[in-house]
Length: 263
Image 1 (cartoon, helix red, strand yellow):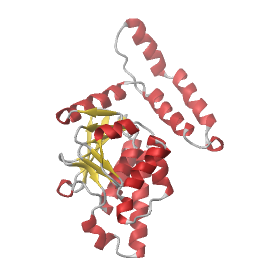
Image 2: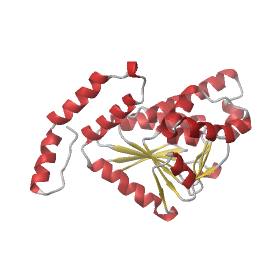
Image 3: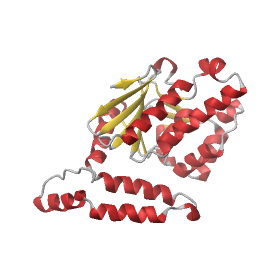
Image 4: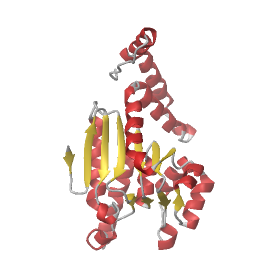
């Protein structure tokens, strides 16, 4: 286990975890936490043994409840400090959004502001019944840049994105499902077990296939002229040429579970 004071990484087989560990402040994010997130995601991207990453908050009160206001005096009191902080936030978002393997946000309690930003960067979002979601920018007079708005809009569409920002209110878990913000709601005491099994299910599938789908869906969300169609074709071809494709066919004929190696 490798950890910082406020962000913890943990491995469970082929699944990596990034745990935001600031429970006394509902896992509110500081500069060091944003920077640690980027570093840990980079390490997992390079680790061939990791096939899925789960992002979660410590404790039972929150996934991430925005920025750690107690740190503003130290981290965001100058123009240079604000720029450094904003760059760190966007780098962390990019490290999750552009991560080459599947990511799951495991959400219980409050998922607010920066928490919504992180969650919308993940591929899947699974929440407990007590989860609550909000982007309170309009209650604070904050501007919200294009990248963050676009990432949320890619998940819930234009109309719900407007509703989330216009009202700045807390949305309950069932509302989040209706908007398409989360994939599944799970009973509070079942969340960790459910996500563990869900991640293991994905990790057991052929990595080349799963990762190629992630890339292709990402390209499909881009403007047509910006899509890398050659890369999409190459990834599909690589699947058919892989040892895993042979293993998948053999396992099917032999009526056994395949053992994929990602090559």
